[in-house]
Image (cartoon, rainbow, N blue to C red; front, side, top):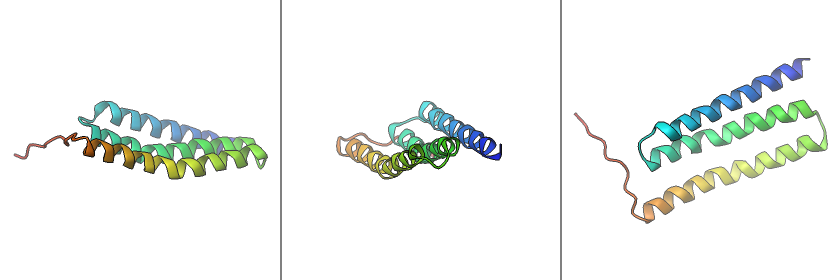
Length: 101
């Protein structure tokens, strides 16, 4: 009974963090700030959702596979965020200029 509650809490927290990243994607003004919002939330969101699913599954082969999926995402998400930002900078996409009063 306790594991189901913890699993539901992790899944709910992952969903909220995913929504926060989506709001950042929608609300932020330029490519680099949007990339930052998604880059910061996607790894933790994936961890929370995969951990919640692994708790529901128990100690099985499926939970091991979920752990391997997280290990893959743990290394590829930051790498892809860096590659996107670097490619945008190399292509000449300037950051948005801020106005200081």
